[in-house]
Length: 120
Image (cartoon, rainbow, N blue to C red; front, side, top):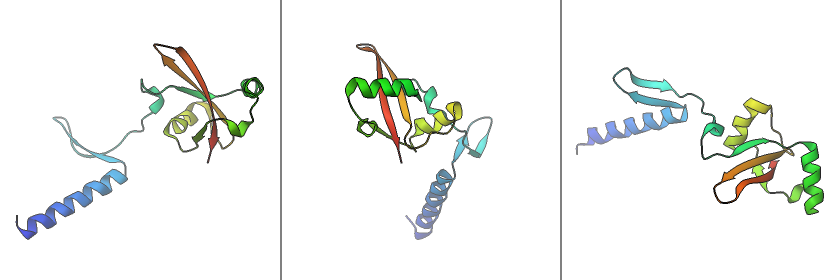
């Protein structure tokens, strides 16, 4: 391979990486070819992502009393989790200290409910 070819390939790779960082994707189809802006994707609409919603004050109080634990003993979830980012569009801003109710469907156990504390 000639030196000029290697330089050209490196330039193409660097352009491709920069385009990914700017959330653009290359489309090559019969209708369109070129770089286009990626659309936002709501991860909560994916079939493998369980339902996420904010827990009510009553649910939190019942949970803590039932298991005799404090709020900070709950499992954690980061505030920048993709599911929480998608959840913000439906329920408003999610902040540190909120409790999220996650409802999972399982063919074996049926419905499983998990609560997580939002951390930074």
